[in-house]
Structures are given as C-alpha cells and as structure tokens.
Image (cartoon, rainbow, N blue to C red):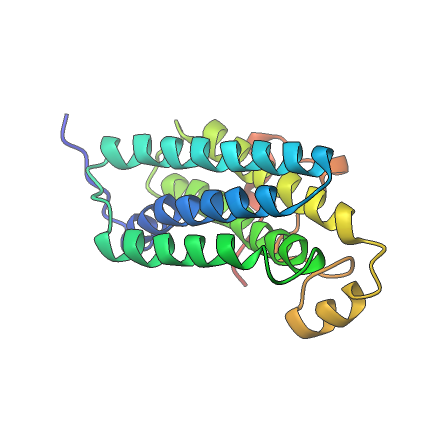
Length: 190
C-alpha cells in the first residue's frame, strides 16, 4: 500500500527527528565516556540506547509513508553529534548535563507535534508510540536537570539559555501526566 503524507511540516519533522536522534545518541556516547561516576555513565548510556530506539521508531513511520531520509539532515546532525561528543571531554562536568537537559526539553514537543500533525490528517494509529517517545524525552530532561539542580551555575545558565528549574520548553509534568487520548494539551503552538 502506497501512503504519502500531504503535510510538509510533518514530513520535515519526521526527517529532522530521525537525523537528530543520531546526533543525540552520538553526543551521549561522548557524555557517558567523559563522566567518572559509574551510575551517571550507566544512566547516560541508557539514554543513548533510548535515542537509538527512537530513531528506529521514526524510521518505521517514515517507511510507512514513503518519507525519504534527508541526506542534508543526516550530514548536519552527524557532524553536530560528533562535535558535541568530543566537546564533553573539554567543557567540564556541568555543561554537558545542562545542554543535554535543554535539548531534551525541546525534543519532547517533537513527538507530541508529530502526534498532532498525524491526528490533523485523521491518522491516530501512531498516537501511543509518539506519546511514549515524548514522555521518554521528558524523563531524560528531568534526569539531566536532577543532576545539576543544586549547581551554582544553573541560575546563570537558566538566565542565558532560558531553560532550568523555572523554565522548560514543554508543559509536561510527569507527576500529573495526561493519558494519550487527552495529551493534545501538550506542546500546543501559540
């Protein structure tokens, strides 16, 4: 069955998310290798595996709807991921945790927007997997913030980069999650 999406924003978001997941996984390889604490290493390694899994899930959706991989995004995000991975060894302990949390905060909405875009086309069969990936990204954000929440650098970085204890790029509270069928309140564009 040949299915194509008549939704340019959704097609672009699928392509970008697929490639960006590789960048994130690469970054976490370097991040895990750069930390000394074994529990942190293990947690970051699990997050890396989650990102590879998300990439696989996005590819499944791309195949269903004949969305080609973007060579441009693949190249761009490959470089970004490798650069971030290498930088983890030179920028200290705080910044990799901070910027990973900030990145994950934005990534949460990618999956909820995909769900909303699919729903706008009358497609609901991917709701569960997109919801789960969005929630998993939120769990990543919370993990990274938890690691740095007492750092004296956090208030400064929060002012500079608009993310931290008081600011997030999504409106999800893991303690008061909406179920899949009521999750359209998440990440609404203003």
